[in-house]
Length: 220
Image: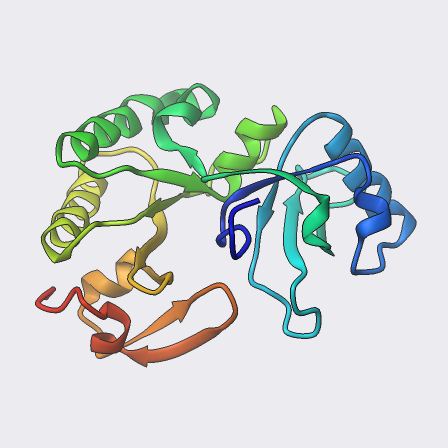
């Protein structure tokens, strides 16, 4: 596992000893759902650290509508983690997207890569791709993640996402990851709000826009 543990939204695989390394209690239905998911070789997603369990790796799992258990939250000792990977790339989940979404999303991915931007996915479309079960419905949106390298890349990203919504396809949601691992919804940044909701690996806070942007000043 990387030094410092996985970042929020990373994919995290657990080894066979995960049950002995749990730092939370799981009721039998939740434990069974987690065990089945692990046995299938699928990853959890890293969530915000739990201040009550310092040093533990906090993870989440979302199962499809109709499953006996819909969500599982757990914390494990770092020794339970056998692999960590970034969130899924947008281009990798396209085969799992509804047919009507594929070309608009593929066009968005091509435009982003041409601009030097890597778009990744979390939320319902990512879970649908990981599980093969139906998570995406008619009212679903696509939750995107991006890590622009500088203010110019951030401006290009915001313009790209706003423009893509005018060309059909699903509604685009998601976060921009700013310096200091600060995640802010791209729509909030685009709106120009003086204060924005910031999520990081440990907390959620409403901060002044300039504080959230950090070294990315100059973004309108």
